[in-house]
Length: 253
Ligand SMILES: NC(=O)c1ccc[n+]([C@@H]2O[C@H](COP(=O)([O-])OP(=O)(O)OC[C@H]3O[C@@H](n4cnc5c(N)ncnc54)[C@H](O)[C@@H]3O)[C@@H](O)[C@H]2O)c1
Image (cartoon, rainbow, N blue to C red; front, side, top):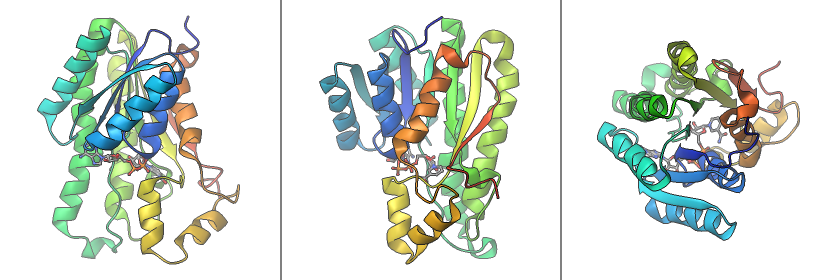
């Protein structure tokens, strides 16, 4: 039983920023060799450099999660560089347009679903075969508390995260006997560049989110990544099909 990520090969989507960045860095610190993927090579390579400075091993591979072939290429790159793939965190995501559901632009809806839902589906298609090959694996998909406690003017986002939770739980059943665990993390409001973008757009949003959170604050991306890192490790060996809320109590009331 390994209680850290020593010797593991972990792939992160959306690894250049926010939660994915924290997952990549904390996984590297725990001994994993990390394949950092994202649309953004500059910020992605900066994460690789940071892992390297801390004594870890990492590589950047550009991956647009809407493109299935790029998922397969990224997994192949992880296997080529680090010998196998035995863990992943699928964190790439897109935020809401900010309109009531009947006013959401259908193109926006489709674009968001292509990233948040189809992107996760393609992750399964590329990552699972490599994990079956390795005989074990742990997949952690980043959903959101909005999957169970939706908020207004974000039906496309909240429903996409509901799909991620249910797809993760269903997939957990598909692979439960094959040594692959699949879990979803549901973060609450977490201070990342994505959320900062929303807070810059809407006056009073930050104060409202802080007031809504029983802990009275926003989360730090590392606080989400600690939970992901645990799910990636053997400490979570009996945990599959879970939808783990990490939200300072936001979804309780
Ligand atoms: N920040 C929050 O409060 C919060 C709360 C709940 C869930 N989440 C979820 O956490 C995940 C990470 O979000 P974050 O807040 O860290 O945002 P972020 O914007 O800081 O990071 C998201 C990353 O995804 C990448 N990305 C976007 N589209 C992509 C694509 N097509 N292909 C590959 N990469 C792409 C971006 O380049 C970026 O690096 C998202 O799925 C988001 O929905 C965030």
